[in-house]
Length: 376
Image (cartoon, rainbow, N blue to C red; front, side):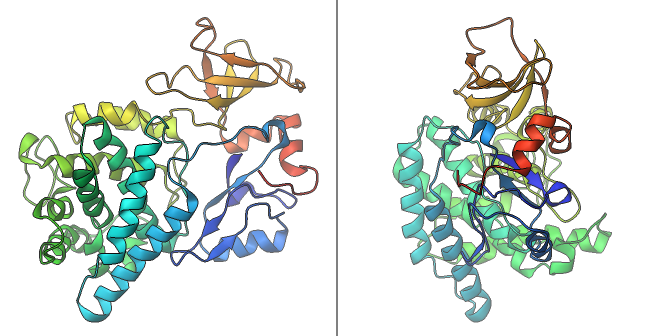
């Protein structure tokens, strides 16, 4: 499947992944064949992109670190907890803790899996889906640090609630296109203090988890906020969540820009080591994120076009690929799999952006007409 933004969606394409609202309501169904009317509807819902299937590689499955149903339940529980707090001033985390245990168990069971895709979200649902993604990434990192189950759950709760202080930030600031004014920046930065004050009053949540909200915008070089803490003075939980927070923010669609491709975000993250982010923790994360996720379309050094079929931890730059088109652009029926970890003279020279895929005639024809809307 291929992630495609609304700007290049076309009637006749078939959706290859569900899109849900913050309440778990299904907005776009896996297998839906798009029409001009449905594309306009997507835009009205504030959806920036969707996954589209292509029969050239329909047999390739994208592995999931956490099941969609688990994500949906987590987002619902988080939304309910936030709504309850806004209504009564009381943060009830009982349901949230139960869903967190399920999420942690799934990640532990899939610990050899890598980060390939995340759920798509509407712009208005950003905080909820972002918080769940940050929690998933944080737990995956912590597994490599040998956290036990209790600490994983504690960290996950802190990660899920790290942006609860954003409830006090006006939505027009959160969704603003363009630079914030000094006053708006100050209002945005207050969310770390507000979040800490909300969480630390809950006896069932540890003080360490509360410090995730307080410290996740601190920076290793001391340039962060609110206290300009430096290095190990920032708690490890917060240093883990900072890595997850930045990565998910980079790959997410926002009202003012399309989300970056994983390899683009990967390159930016590497420049932040020992400046904004703890290098040791960042290295663990980078070893677990797929630079070229399954389903990414790439050009090889021989000129062939291929799709990434599988990726292994610590070998992200040498995935297994399936040849789709030869160097002349002709479709290769039942193209062979090529393990770049074994064929060291072959390497990825380009990752195709979505608009570039439409310049490949055979590929574009597959996107536009997949043979009747079969699901992936």
